[in-house]
Length: 463
Picture 1 (cartoon, helix red, strand yellow):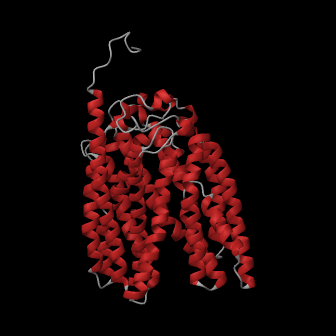
Picture 2 (cartoon, helix red, strand yellow; picture 1 turned 90 degrees about the vertical axis):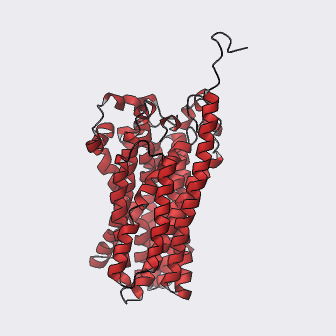
Picture 3 (cartoon, one colour; picture 1 turned 90 degrees about the horizontal axis):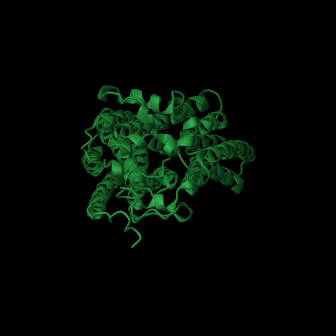
C-alpha cells in the first residue's frame, strides 16, 4: 500500500499514536487498544450488532404474525432498501457535522423506528392486513440504522494516519483486518441471536433487543474520544485538499464545501455491490440446496461456515508483506474466489458443501479488507465517511440483488443455476480488480511525473 495516498483529511489530533512504540509483527493486534483505547473495540463490535439483527428480525416477526414468507421477505427487503439509501446519507452528514451528533440522532431515530415496526407489524398481523405503514416503518428502520462499522473504519484511518505518512501502514492494515472480522462475526452472531430469541421467547423480542442495544451502545460509541480524531469536512481548506504528496487526492479532492468524487471511487463501490451479490446469491442457493435434502433450515449453518473461514483470513491480512500492493491483493483474492466458486456446483451432500464453503471463504475476508483499503485511498478529502458508508450500503444493495436473481433461477432451474449468480459475482470482482489496478497504476505514474517537476526557486513562487 502506498502510504502517500492515504486520505489527507485526518486531523493533527490523530497523530498522537506515533508516540506509542510499534508492536512487533507477531503482536500487531495488541497495538489497536493502545491506539484507540481498550473500550473502543468492544463498543465498536457490539454497537454494530443491531444492524446484523435488523433485517432477519423484521423477516422473522413479519413471517410469524402474517404466516406468509412472501410478506416477511418483502418487509425485510424494505429494511434493506432503507439501509442502502440511508447509509451514504448518514456518512455524508457525519463528514459535514461530525460523527458524534449524527450517531446520537440516528440512535434515537432508529430505536423509535424499530419500536414502531414492532407495534405496527404486531397490530396489523392480528388484523390480518399489512398496509403501507408496515413497509414505511421497515424502510425508516433500515435508513436510520447507525453505520457503526463504516464510521469505525474512518476513525481507524484517522488514528493511523500519522504512522502511515511516516511510511508504516501496518497499523492501518491491522485495523482494517480487525474491522472486516468484526463484520463477519456480527453478521454470523446477529442472525443466530435472532433465531434463539424468537424461537425460545417471542418473535418480536429480537427487534426489541436490537433497539435496546442501539439506544445504549451507539451513544457510547458516538461520544468515545476517538471521534475527535476525525475532522468535519468543513474544516478542510482548499489548499490542504489539493496539496501534499497524495497521488490519489491531487487533482480530485476539492474544498470541503463542494467536494466531488473522482470516477475511481465507483470501482470499489461496484465491487461491494458484487460482494453483496455474491453473499445474497450464495445464501439463497444454499437454501435451495438444503431444501433438496429436506433440510432448508441448515442453510444458515452452511453459510456460517464460509463466514468463519472468511473472518479468520481477514485477520491474516495484517501479517501480509508490506510490499504486497493492494491492487495485487485484490486480483489474487478475486481470482481465487472465481476459481473456488465453481466448486459450488460439485457437492451432492451437505458434508461436501461444508468442505467447499470452508475453502471458498478463505479469499473472501482478504478481498473485503482490500476493497475497504482502496476505498480509503481514493476517497476525496473530507468525504471518507461518505465513501465508507457507500461501500457498506453497496453490500446491502448487492445482497438484495443476488437474493432476487438466485431465487428466480432456483425456482425455475434448481440450486445449481442459482450458484451461477455466485460465480458471476466473483468473476465481476476479478474484472473490477483489473480495472482498478490499471487506474491506480496510471494515477501513480501521473503523481510520479508531477513530483519529478522541480520546485520553483524560493521567492519566485508568485511569478
